Image (cartoon, rainbow, N blue to C red):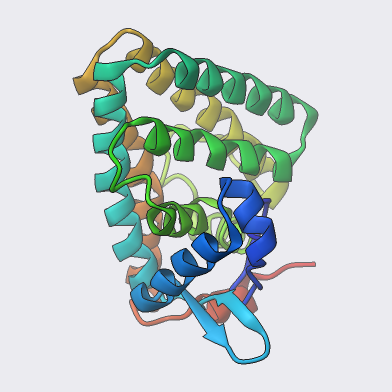
Length: 240
């Protein structure tokens, strides 16, 4: 389900669940989802409601590049402002994510990872960034879109090209554990730069962090083509 683990194309989006998640009324959430339909993030099916689109690799790359611009700027602004409560919230999320990592709770880790990035955007003070529609599309990008199939693809294509220092990983579980550990390290570095009031470092670290999945998508485009749909990759890389 959206915002809580490994999500997939055509997954339903429940207005009531999302409204509670974002602290919005159902009409406000419905309006945000309607805007996301116009942007091509989700689609509306009569008698079924909203659901996540079956993105092409080109779609994912384009949206991730927009996320890079938004979140890097948000981190810079947050480092300049350093509001007390959001910094405490970010530290709490990081500590909870580290605990989920140690306990091997991948779905919980993924949710806390998503929360960490969304809080950077929310706490930046930029009202355009924190509109329900922007948070909606960002959450889709952060919520483990076909996470396990993408990891299986990385393993088959070779992980050393993405991270030459990564240990040899033969299974999805091994690579998830490695990536989650690296993610905790990068999140800690980002938060430290914000605490120190270093906007240049905060912006640079978030940019580097977000560029990694973009490079992953670019490699997939080189192998399979920009117009390949995620459903096609799922069929190819799903493993029982």
